[in-house]
Length: 401
Image 1 (cartoon, rainbow, N blue to C red):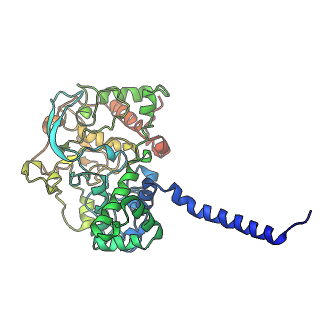
Image 2 (cartoon, rainbow, N blue to C red):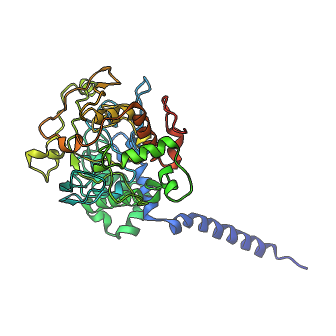
């Protein structure tokens, strides 16, 4: 058999070239808006000095909160900016399960397991003061924030995006060939893509022990079950007043009804010393859509999903431990012996803003015994997504019993 070596070489080269082209075009074939949003979420080029991304303050390995630490091993109360010296005045909330927060509005909430009746007032939105309607609006804030990612304007952000051939191709595919004709249009495309990523199952898997028990795949320990009973009780605690969205047993419970309340959180003195000024956070009143002085000091109720691994707590990161938070709530109840902050050994400090305290809700319940505090902690630990369960610190509380 006579072999045409010239033809064989040409056919071989063509096959190699075809294979190479297919490999190069494969990412385009698999391109999704979620993948685009993921790349943007982790892209440090969206910060002024190319040192910080969305993931810096919302670490996927730690419940989507800012897990960066001081040299002493404690997490920062608030996030550090891309210049490594600026700090904000609010603790970065998790973006896990954030897609379930309704658009910011004034309306009615039906409460479950509460003796306080239903709620009428401001609900939902993104950020602790609800100032952005949705996830896209929230995603657009940090790059332009002078403390966080510190970009001076949208134009520079878009310029950074256009520098990437992947971004140029992706933006035009999903948002049209003329997406870069307008800075605002291109900037919105960026925020929309990030929001799409944040709506993916990675951010809300609903696979905690609580969810597994509902599905019959696991069982609560005695302490966890006792804590659950306390949590959803109408008589013993006031937790479900604000941290229950739907009737008991619903398999997509977010553990927040997205209302706004002032629970009397004290000022974080150490944070104020770091900032060199008092904070006196106005909460909901800082929302441009709100001008009612009665809303001062109110913050949106956070989800309790992953609460055991997303310290520090409260809007200013003033508390380091979950037990402290439970004892802080308990101090409002008549006859409670929990009048000392276990982290300082001193009496609880006065509220940062006292005029608008939600005393009706805070005083609803019965004082807790030490064993009941442990049981509450154990139930709250059971709200941890499966991939974060290894991060739970026992701190002397054994929840297996």
